[in-house]
Image: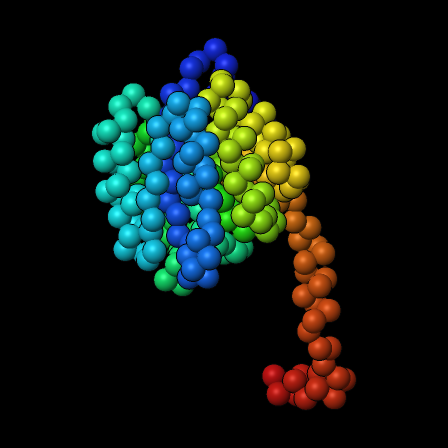
Amino acid sequence: MTDLIPKEKKFHFFVYIIESPSAVDMYHQRGEGGVIQQAVRLNQLQCVHRLAINRQAFEASLQIGLTEAMSATPNSVPIIHISAHGFSDGIQLSSEEIIDWAQLKGLLTPINKALNGNLIVCMSTCEGYSGSRMAMLSEPDDFPFLALVANGSKPTWPETAVAFSAFYHLLANDRYVTDAVDAMRVASGNDSFFVTTAAESRQSYLDFVAELDTSEVREELEGQIETPSDSALEKFAAER
């Protein structure tokens, strides 16, 4: 993977957190948004925290709130940090509404274009790395992000809080994104934190399709088709 954010180029950023905890998490006052916000600010970085309990609020946070945050934080690029319950097909909001990857791609792509293809998205969710699917069927001029940082399994809240606190600390100290993700695994004790670029996700999908053994697929399909009996063949021939 090509290293992201060269050390010789100072990366000015702020963190834009969109959090949508479940009803149970809200009842127990359990979440990571406040922890991440405090960790980011300790590194003398700006951080905006938005609570989005339903689809309307979630969409508004990306279409309106982000613009407001960027106006208040000039000369800095936002890193979008989404904290919610997730699964292989997308995320679930507090309202139990689902936002699938295709819908999230539709919300992120205009932002990435406005940022000249430099958007970093952090998915603090279960199976958030499945979000790489957003880029698999995209053309380069339609990518929803530059890079996606996420977990491929089901991390606990303490693991994500510790991991992303370490991630932002290292970025604030001019470390590469790839190095920061390596540190996330060590700090959290969870080895399923990864980073990918949109270009890599797309190429991986294209390589997968190209390597499909069509002969094996054909044989499998033929094996699932019941072979007609001799009498059936004779009847078919007689009716021709």
